[in-house]
Amino acid sequence: MSKKLISGAVALSMCVTLAACGGSGSAPADKKASDTPSSTTTESTQQYGDTGGLKLPLVDKPVTLTWMLPSNSSNIKDDILIVKELEKRTGIKVQFQTYSPQTYQDKLKVVVASGKLPDIFSGLKPAELKKIGKQKGVVAINDHADMLPNFKKLYLEQNNWVVKSYGDENGKLYTWPIYDLNRDVNHGFMYRKDVFDKLGIKEWTNTEEFYQALKKVKEAYPNTYPYASKGLANIFRDWSYGWGIGGEQYPAYYDEKDKTWKYASVQPAHKDMLDFMKKLYNEGLMDPEFLTDTQDSWTTKMTSGKSFVTWDWIGRLDLFYNQIKAQNPEYNMRYANPIGPTGNVRTLPKVSDFSIAVANNKNKDAALKLLDYLTSPSGGELMTIGVEGVNFKWGDDKRPVYPQLADLPLIDISVLEDRYGMWLEGAYLRPDRRSVYYKLSEKEQEAQDKIMKTNKREPMDPILNFTDEEISVLAELQTSLQKSAEEFNAKYILDKKYGDPQWEEWKKTTAKNGLDRYIQIYNDAQKRYDKAK
Image (cartoon, rainbow, N blue to C red; front, side):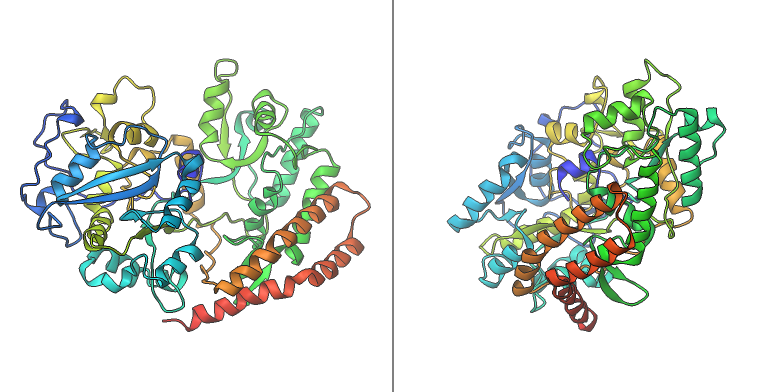
């Protein structure tokens, strides 16, 4: 999951408050970040809240570390708040080497090829990172767990599947995970409640009611298409959770009943979903451009009364209203119940992998301890809320208030990154739930409550660990299989001649194209996962 997913969607979950204490509170609230003292004088660990058992400072003598990561900010320099505060607390001066997300991967390839790795860096593909780890280029983090209390607690004890899923075949883990980043609910169906109320239509609670609601809207507004989509072929993945065939590896998914991996695009449930989409399309209830529409075109339809129901990121609920309120103050887009036999949505992971790695050099102990501090509640508060009394104070709602930013219309994580060096991608290892990122609007909170109060989420699929050979085969097969599936899905819905005979022929064709081998790899990896301790 990337920063663009965070700021645009994604990827994210849960409104639980972490148990983290505030900072020293010794500086006045209007003190500038640049005035923060950089002294590394030993101060009591308790001053900085819950460090998870780490003693501050982390080093006996000053250490300078390099940390390479993506950022759109050009202000991440030595005098920024986070750099100075980290040095003050830990004794470690961090030199952040930042590159724009657009060029980061290219720069990373050059740096890795040079062999001169930064002390900490992120962004490699898992297979590449494991390869470097086997060559002793980066540290096997779990080999050092005894000096990393936060890592040990979260990833070896509470989530002991992490090594099985992200480590190599020898049980070595080279990536430092991120804990509790995602919100509970981030995407789903949404509808124009103002229009539904005007027409006397109740929000649907199942698939048939969804269909009937679209029909009533169409009757009232015959020149419209009630349902519109901008997700292109992703609509099949997005809807799949409601039919019990969704997962992080879609179109591969884990069937909890059979305890085997299957391919969604050939399952009976997938055909049922296509049949339902076909019915909506044939009856004019679904926008004919649902597989090709652009975001701009879709936005126009959803804000001008040409379409009324869609599937998207929950932030759109308020964005659409703010965009249209001057022309239509009654506009009221709301999060809706899921559809499909399961009536479920996606479960977002509690643990995320950004391939954050530590170079195997003289600074490795300091780098590991720094990452462990950032994984503590104290470090999480620092990187995602700030320093109490320096750049923020607590508001009446127990949320941070930033006096220095009072003139800004919106304080989001991009602002905090640029001004203070907070929320740097891959440097927030345990986000604090009190951060502005988790301050949900009334409509966004309604979405969380609607799903979580009755637990309308599909179970998380296991995160499997593939061998180099399996990765090669999957890469070879996946693109062709998925392209073929998307082409068939489109023809099945758009062509009235397509039906049961074409479905049966499609299943035979895709089997010949390596489907059995593809799914066998998943099930072989699952067997290893089940056997691993």
